[in-house]
Image (cartoon, rainbow, N blue to C red):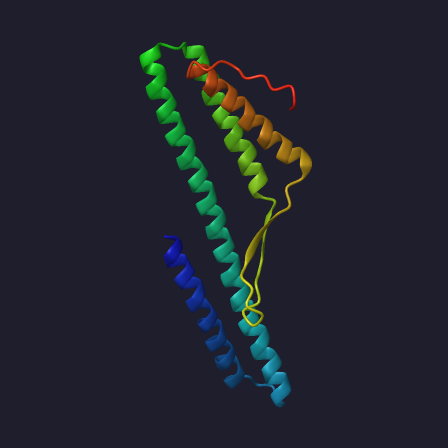
Length: 164
């Protein structure tokens, strides 16, 4: 799916260029500079719309990847717990911790920014994390709680580290 989206993003660049050319040819502006400006605005608008769709698709894929990982982790831990007979209360606590982590990750996703690259300079798009410290702390705390509960469920108990 990602490779399809990458090729679609590449073709969107060419379609934006074609839109620029068509807007240039259909301009009612009497001067070449004015017509070129109108066409450039139309082409840039199409390119921006394409990039926003691409960014949205990437964020959706990241969210989907996190949900798949959570589901795999849940299946693995339930398979282990069913043979060792852990309590329903612990299962409920783990499910709540997973939901808390998913919620914290969802809140953090809003703070990612895609910085577009410059093809002429040879740079690529890059994802920049602008997560505020309190949101990041919530993600870390939720992940740590889930890890601790999973260790308990697997029979590993809790782990104390005085350096942290």
